[in-house]
Amino acid sequence: MEGAPGTFKYRPVSPINRDAMAAFLYRLAGAPAFTPTTQSFVDVPPGTQFYAEIEWLATTGISTGWGVGDQREYRPLQPINRDAMAAFLYRFVNGGTAPLTEQCGAPYPEPEPQPGPDVEAANQLANGFAVPGAAQSRNALAGLSVQAPGTMVGYDRALFPHWRDADSWGWPSEPVATCDIRQAALWREGRNVAYTSACDILSGTWLDAYTVVTLYDKSDVDVDHIVPLAEAWRAGAASWTTTQRTAFANDQLEVIAVDDGANQSKGDKGPDLWKPPNQAAHCLYAKRWIAIKTKYALTVSAPEKSALDSMLNTCAA
Image (cartoon, rainbow, N blue to C red; front, top):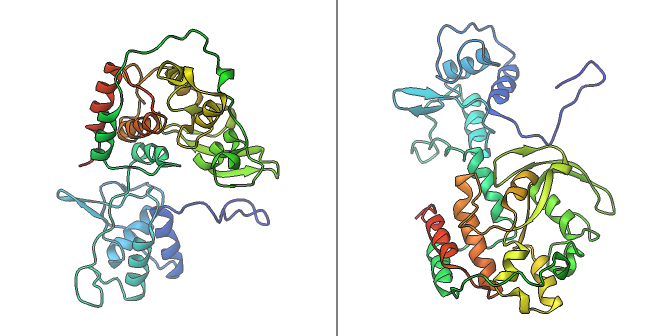
């Protein structure tokens, strides 16, 4: 907890990292007298916060960490998952059995490594999207009509009415039914978002899919049309009705809350001219771009198709 007596903060909804878990367990054991005499984990040298508590976990057998070559890692700043929490508590109660065994006697598997921040950020692109397999996306890409981009004559963003009432255009009624599209995207992509009954977003944090930057001020967050409205115009939307353009501009598949600087850098460029700086996002970005163009029967240019094909090469098999 933090703060002076009477002003302590527990932060009940904040995630707990593995270093803090070591401190909790050490205190739960009654803070036994213990002086570390070695360094068990390569990533927890003396002087690290909770070094003594983490070494206590290692010497009692409560934590074994991860084997990396001939060294071991504790990964102190990694959030602890429920399976690892179960292992810690089991070992704590049973005197630090290591390796932990299940009732069947089989070795208890070590927790799977957690994704890095680049992958965590990229996964924002799965929001509002039934993610297809890479083969399915390749088939969809092959089915798109390849044409040179059309003219920009007559284009105006106002021809794509956007930021309409969210739940009227297929969005969940979250956090409240009064959200417009922009507010709904800020809520969906945000963490610990505070809002009013009118769905005015007050505060929160946002992990940007494009740059892996964490944003702490909503004024730094833009809501991007993944296939830019001008690109849609060049690819067939010039002939649409206003109703069709409104459906496109407010589709939850088409919009995502991102870093404003990245959004401005992207502008109305296709993937042949702009890709997310976060390479871990390339697979999902390509899949989502293809899904949008398929859903709305938009064309692709030859360079755009080639770029999308290359981005799909980054997808896991």
